[in-house]
Length: 241
Image (cartoon, rainbow, N blue to C red; front, side, top):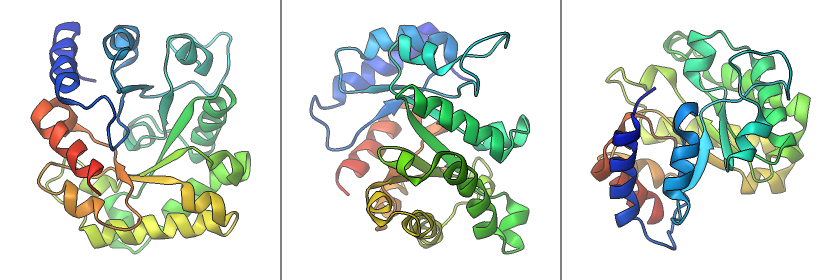
C-alpha cells in the first residue's frame, strides 16, 4: 500500500527509460487497485507487464469493496497475486480461499502468482515443507496441476520479510526444489516449466546469488521495487541468470 499518482509516474518513468524494449527477464508491476488503470496507461508502450495485488474469489455480485478477475482483465491486467503472506497472516485468508482466488484468476485467463511460505515458528519447528505442501496442495486439489502451465509460484519465507533475517540461497533452493518436485509428482513436464520466484527480502546486493540457484527463476520484490536504481539492478541480475 504505497504510492501516489505523482510518485508512481516518477518511478515508472525512470524504470521505463532504462528498461530494454526486449528484456532478458520478464517484469510485472503490481500497484494498488486504485492506480491500476493509470499504471496501465503508463506502461502501455513499454515492455513492462501489469498485475494486481489481489482478486476476489467470486466472479460478480454483492461483494462490496471487492474486485473481480473480469474487472482486472477489463483494464489490462495480465497477472494477479494470490495468497500473499500479508493476506494470509493479516486478513486470515485460508488455503481454500486462496485456491478459489487462484481458480477465479485462471478462469479469466489472468496468470496467477501463487504465494506460499512459512512463518518463523514453522521454520524453527521444522514444519516448512508441511506448510508449503499444504498451501500448494489446496490449489492442486481444487484446480489440478495442468493449471500451473504458465502460472507462477512465489515462495515467501515470512520470517525473512522486513525482519532483517534473510534466507540463504541454499535455503531458498531447498524449498524451491521441494515445490518443483511436489508438482512433478503430478506432472513432470509442467513442473519443469513452472516459474518459481523467491520473495524474501530480495535486494540488489543478494539478487544475483539467489537467482544463481537452479530452481530460483526470479523474484517477487517488495520494498526494493520502490527504488528505481535498486529495482533495475535486481532486473539486471534476473536477466543475466
